[in-house]
Amino acid sequence: MQIQPFSVNDGEGIRTNIFMAGCPLRCRWCSNPEGFEQKELVGWYKRRCIGCGACASVCPQGIGIGMEERSRCIACGRCVKACPEEARARMVTIMDADDVIREVMKHRLFYSYSRGGVTFSGGEATSQPEFLDYVSRELYDSGLSIDLESCGYFDFDLVRPSLERMDLIFMDLKHMDPEEHRKYTGVSNERILENIEHLGSLMRKPEVVIRIPVIGGVNNSEENIAASAAYVHDVLPEAKMELLPYHSLGIIKYEAIGKPFDQNEFYTLDREEMKKLRGIAAAHGPKIADYR
Ligand code: SF4
Ligand code: SF4
Image 1 (cartoon, protein in one colour):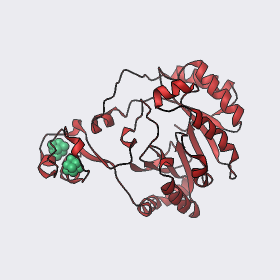
Image 2 (cartoon, rainbow, N blue to C red):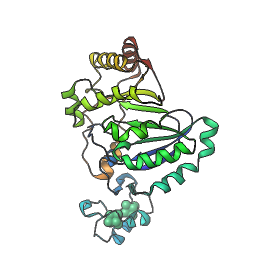
Image 3 (cartoon, rainbow, N blue to C red):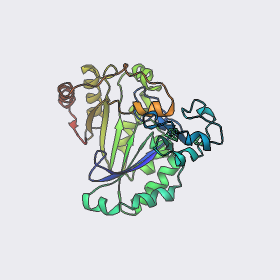
Image 4 (tube, protein in one colour):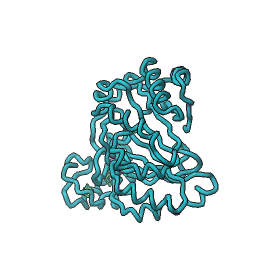
């Protein structure tokens, strides 16, 4: 989806984030909806468009300015090149693994001076296990620090070799109630809970941060935060927790790819409410991390 250099929120130091498409979850608040599927995707940012028609004039599929016929799009990228306002944009691109490594290595100097490195993110990076294995092995063998951000829903044994190379693993825990988890993400939390427990079996011990994206109206009850923290401290006492407030920055991407999004379904907790929930989590044992 994107190779984003100079990130300082996703691990130690200055890092490059590799956002990989494909995800087994369908979180209703997701801020990266372009990454649901592993397929090339071109979007249209209506707010940037001046209606010049350059995109429509080069499209081999006869797709008009507003992309109403987007189901016919073959992601050839001609409109992206033709658009003078960057209103058409590649949202997901197929890249060769070696090209990704070359891109990441351009910023190697920044990693070494800041104790930074590379963070695999998504979408869900583990949904491309062979790619993750190859790229993480090459970067690890080059001496880079590598981290992973994951929804936690993956085949642990398949991904284990990649996990063993990580310095830091961020794993999401979105709800302790399996049915509420299914209602809002499309899957039960059982596999995610199992994988959190399995992290303790890794030979090369990574730092682990269990992240709760705190979504107002979904998982922000004091009971859920307390139960999550107690669980984490019980099964993985050395793990830290991070509570991140929901943000609605992804709305513009829903517009760009033509997916509906109900802005009123979720809300963002204010600073005091987040502070209270972090206090509740800490009271149940885990240390609280803050990478934002
Ligand atoms: S990516 Fe290609 S097929 Fe899709 S809208 Fe643009 S020009 Fe048309
Ligand atoms: S080329 Fe770009 S600015 Fe012009 S109509 Fe198409 S999307 Fe809008």
